[in-house]
Structures are given as C-alpha cells and as structure tokens.
Length: 367
Ligand code: SAM
Ligand code: SF4
Image (cartoon, rainbow, N blue to C red):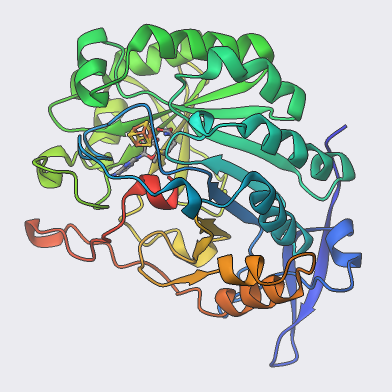
C-alpha cells in the first residue's frame, strides 16, 4: 500500500498569525530533525524533480543541439548519492518525487534507484514516485516501474506521424515509443502524454492528438516552448505557438470547461465536455503559477535550482561527499538554499525577443 493521509499542520508566521501548511504528512511532522521546508514567500516545498542524467537517446530540436557535449560520468551523483539526496528531501517534507533527465531510463542501473525509493512509498513518507520519459525504453521497464510503485508516467510525444517524429527527435523512432505507451498502460500505469506546441509542426495534428488520447483514456498536456539552452540553428521564436491560440482552436470544436485543479506548477486544466477528457496547458512563460510554486529541481550533479527560470542554484554535492554517513550538513545546505527561492521567474517573449533566457538546457535541470 502506497498511501498516507494528509494532515494540515498550523505553522506560526513571524507576525504571530497561524498559517495552514499544505500537505505535510504525519511522518514528516513528527520527525524531529526535519521541520518542513518553507520558503520566504511561505510556500511549502513538497515536490522535488530530479534529473538523473543529462544524456538522452533522442536529440529533440527544441531541447538539444545535435552535437551536445555531456558531463563526464564522474561528475554525476552515484545511484547511492541520489538515494541519500532524495531521502534527505523526503525527510524534510517532500512528498512527490518526479524522476526526469535527459532521458531517465537510459541511466545505467536506474531501476536500482527506483527500487530503493519504494521504501519511502511503503513508509508513507512519499506519496508519489513518478517519471517523465520519452518512452523509448518503456517497453523494457514498464513492468519493473509498476512493481517499484510507479503509478503514473508522463510520456513526451509531439506528433503521431513517423517522419515528423524522426525529424523532431532527430534520433527517435515512433513505433518504439508507441510500444512503450502500450507497455505502460498494460503494466497498469496511468499515462499522460506531453506535447510541446510547435508552430508549423503539430498545429495540424491538434485534433488527431486529442482524439488519440481520448480513445486510449490518456490525459494530455500541451507545453509552451521555453527559451532554455543553445539549440544550434533552430530559432525559438519560429517554434513558439502560444497556448492561448491552441486553446482557441480547441474551443472551435469542443466545449472547454475550466477545472479548479492545481498542482503547484504551471499547468492549468480544462475538461472537454464531448470526450470527458482532461487537457492541461503548461505556460511557463506566464507568471500565474509562481505564487503557488511548491517545487525545486535537482540536477544529476547535485545542483539545486530553486526556480526553473533563474540561474541561481546551490551546489549540494560537497555537503554530500564531505560528510559521509551524516546528512546534517546536507540538510542545512538544503534549508539555506530554500531561503533563496525567488518569487518568480524572468522568462519573457515580449517584443519578439527572448528575454530572461537561461543558459542551461532543459535536459540539465530536468523538464
Ligand atoms: N527525456 C524525457 C522526455 O522527453 O520526456 C524527460 C526530460 S525532457 C527535458 C522533459 C520535458 O521537457 C519533455 O516533455 C520535453 O518535451 C520538454 N522540453 C524540453 N525542452 C523544452 C523547451 N525548450 N521548451 C519546452 N519544453 C521542453
Ligand atoms: Fe531527450 Fe527529452 Fe530532451 Fe527530447 S526532450 S532530447 S527526449 S531530454
């Protein structure tokens, strides 16, 4: 059983008023060392996204250049170090862990890591263990992931056309990913398809993608392309298809009903009345989600990014490596980093230039 009830714990603000803390479980509340992580804007950090590798078997044009140079393997946190890191966050109130990359399932031995995280699901400290993947390795791993406690998976898929898929991913092949989608559903995982909205690329497949997902009972989320990292000759403004335009096209065919659901991230959801399907829109360039942001991101080298859209980070690796067997220093560093979590990001596509661009790739921080 991987379930624990949520308890709402009052937290006393410096002005003396009580402030309800969202989603802190009994396990974490009772842990003496481990007061929950609250940032300066009173946001409780309950969600950690971990990039376990910067490598990938695809080269999606909006994400990477064709000739990427990757980190030397010795720079990466070992699987044991990833375990220590994630466990420290879980002890401090993180209840949802998303494993990403790069492509998480190309990291050698990655199932060992998933299997060690299962203990946190079983103890009730962790409510959800999940991943974002390009699906290429799911045929092989879906059953093992389910056995480790993974119940939901996000699979990135921008087109249902073989040739377009090969073009956009450069190295990917659609049938392999479709077999991965089948395997995930067969194993019992709930699948959400992530589609990056790309002007002139998948505009014409909008309704096909919606209907394909509806037919297979999969959720669907559209993502606005973000200005992250050098991608060679591609131009992001050429790729940018604002989701408000996409949404308006959807409304020409379907009745959209706004859902109140919030995840503490940049997604907003609607239900399509005709299909009953849930559709998400991730618009990271707007600021409408920063106030409720509940997440931080850890890279595969142990850098903690407090905001996807800012350069500030805390290097946690020395605290991990210099204090073997004792996580007090690590936890102190994590707490200090959280005090630097900014109010919001600075992305801006206004005036046809990409301001507030961050230099690292999405595959570095983890999408
Ligand atoms: N390799 C895995 C995958 O593709 O799902 C996980 C990592 S990938 C960086 C995570 C998500 O980020 C994917 O859905 C991908 O489409 C998205 N992504 C990558 N670069 C992006 C960008 N510049 N703007 C918006 N989304 C991006
Ligand atoms: Fe790889 Fe995912 Fe980036 Fe595509 S989006 S290149 S699959 S990390």
